[in-house]
Image 1 (cartoon, helix red, strand yellow):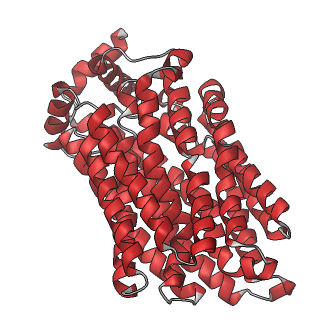
Image 2 (cartoon, rainbow, N blue to C red; image 1 turned 180 degrees about the horizontal axis):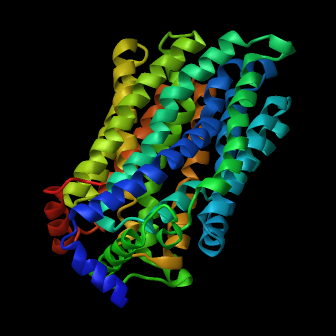
Length: 455
């Protein structure tokens, strides 16, 4: 640690000091709202296909299997480009990388309005995955440059709750566009969805170049004292965590990385199924109006966002991550299974269990990202986080594809839901088997900081 950092650490007193907490509050208010806004745009542009499906399948005469492949092929492009994108972020910085990602996915979303054949559908969904690759793990990596480990679960939860916010906004928005714009200018409602939801991302990509700052040392909106406080706090955190792998190739061969991949694969299987087939499940329950479907999904995602924030906050306060992740995933799995049983006989109760499934599954995600950060750092974190996210997100290809096939050949959503529930339940088993408890020092720091005002 530099003499400047040591001096800052001494002046700050404790982790929960007023000056340090005020600095992190300033960082949070500067970064999180903007990153959450970008994640809302990303999530809406990724999953609006689930709502557009309600019109476009009949108009284009696509089968459920064609839709499932198209929805899922996004994750093949995502898989292929995720690690290179995160390594590029480590090399050229978050500002340029995130701006490029946001601008290109917006263009691809707009292009989706011109889909006429399955081949064009597949190509554009694949390219959307290519262009968006690196955003999510890039932001996770980016936030580790700004926050120590005991503050990250809450910050991750805040950021990732934007996907729930996107569900709250995106459902009614897509439903309103499909209902109100259908036939305007000779275009169908689903075409207007892609156009009107893609343009904001293009504009946001340009704004990112001006607004985002790569690291605390480059932040002109922090004072010199605040920069020193953050540098000292991050150095203290790195020392407390002990040795972590920094070499890229070594991290990719680390068994713990692949254990994390297996755990996250189980969670993403459920998350993808709920994302791309949630609106269809609502329609199966008898709610056929697109706007009604949108509002039901909106309410469920509102609850999911609250769950992410509360679970992340409690994880930070206790210093415990593995059960906060595993138990949440298991609750989501049980609720998905119950939805499969109830959808035909008790549709209102099925909507309740669908909401619980979304809450449980989404609440597991931000806390999960505490786990790899405890043994990876630097370039190894850039590659490892991207590898975990990209490989695990192949579940995003498998889940919609299998669910589409099962729906088409069984005529019921229940079988697919039960299969997804079984996979997600494995997450808890894998966590208990492979993820050790946090060390006592980390738990002690978390509890000590809980007595102070959080950032």
